[in-house]
Length: 116
Length: 113
Image 1: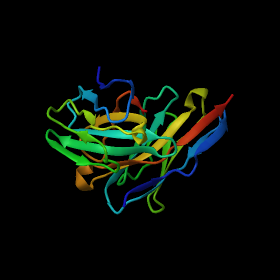
Image 2: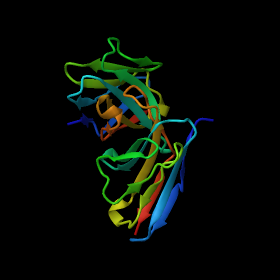
Image 3: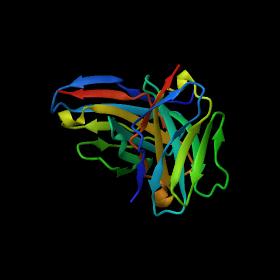
Image 4: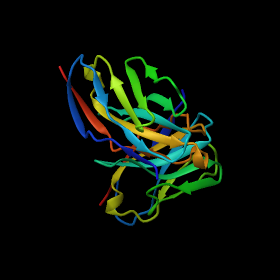
């Protein structure tokens, strides 16, 4: 069965440091997509980065990169040079190709707090 | 502007009083979905739709109904709300396929007393 696990309920990081948010997943599908979303205190959900299961390179988007280790079924989000505006909840999500990519599951989230 | 809209944004109601939360998208997306967000549980999928007149249950469908009569609209119906449905609700839409990210509405905070 599909499952996403985020084991860090909360993290504190000093401004300008890099931070890694953990995400492990479980699926029997060979083709799937992994996503990270950010939810600031204002509540909206913001898409950050996508990694396809067949992508050989780790995805990068500006200061965000995804450390994808397929054999270990992990898709950790790395934020380089953290900023105060990075303080938010972060959710990992997965979408399988099976069932027409219809079901989407999310992890329980990690609350990241950046210290000045 | 490409967007997903939800109404109302905030709603306080009483147990048993039927309510509808509307959701509309202007991106011609086939896929639409409803989630509820509760502390410590992340987002859980309630219902989803892959096209007009095609809907299916997510992980937590009990107590909810949906319909998809038009491609742009996907209302969430609570026919007899109960206090355990107090939550933050998100509607989202996307193209169909495992590589497409979802676009989320602003959320609806529902309190059932």
